[in-house]
Image 1 (cartoon, rainbow, N blue to C red):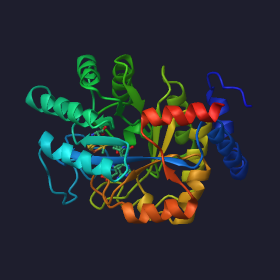
Image 2: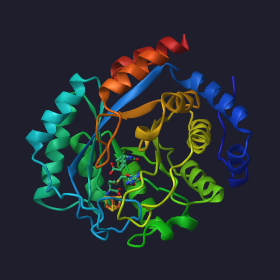
Image 3: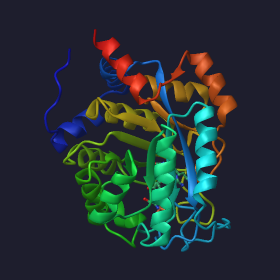
Length: 330
Ligand code: SAM
Ligand code: DTB
Ligand code: SF4
């Protein structure tokens, strides 16, 4: 059995990243099998609880008020509507429910209370609750934890040297600070990035190394392929090749053996064969549904066909999962 790796140096991450692709995939698949049931995929549902009109200028995002993308704005949803969506997601087989808000930072006052209420009610459905609300301070992170939040998604997107080419309204340091507040509050960190922003291999290595150097390793790592959005500065970027996704996923799997590695945005453009390669390389989580936050996604029927074809099954909810894991260790 491969030994658990200590802290990774940047040089080691670079070497890993540049491993010949088939060898990298093989190593990642081996690590995947040591730590996870290889035919199980975590199925998550994503809901946009507040859409558009965001003050940040992220160059990839349909929801930034700085870009004219024609997106219809939507104020914060009522907890009742969110809980209904969560119930439907559970019935459709999701075990994790993630709520996304187009905010620079979590709001104080009535809106924050409303989000806390959503978390309490969704957690009561026995779903793993995750949310992504932009920057948080320490007190907000603690209140989210108290309400029953399992994980907080806050992506670093790319390496620190490329970051200001993509976003100018906040810094990499701001992102790291929020991640610190999240993990100190005892909330699982969900943190990953985007492939296809025009970044170099060096930037991807920087991102992986930064993630591997966080005080607590992320519990889940979303790997997004850029979905180019007309009207955004990155709307003309070419689609990333599946090989770039596979390399990033495999490296993430090896760096974070226990994490859920999520094949996130961009699945709509990936063939069954391409997705199969991503799962072989260690991806073990997806978003289900016909829409991500604002962009089209494959939908449940297509995913059911893919699961049947590949012999994959949805990962059971956490307590049943604990039983599976102990069975694997016997
Ligand atoms: N406003 C919050 C924030 O930025 O943290 C939460 C929502 S934001 C849309 C969540 C993540 O979605 C971003 O950090 C980015 O990684 C990803 N994302 C947004 N637009 C994308 C796109 N067009 N293609 C791929 N990933 C995207
Ligand atoms: C993440 O890393 N990917 C999800 C989730 N976290 C919030 C969001 C992807 C958004 C893709 C573009 C859109 O649908 O607007
Ligand atoms: Fe706002 Fe998040 Fe989109 Fe950036 S990625 S513009 S912070 S919604």
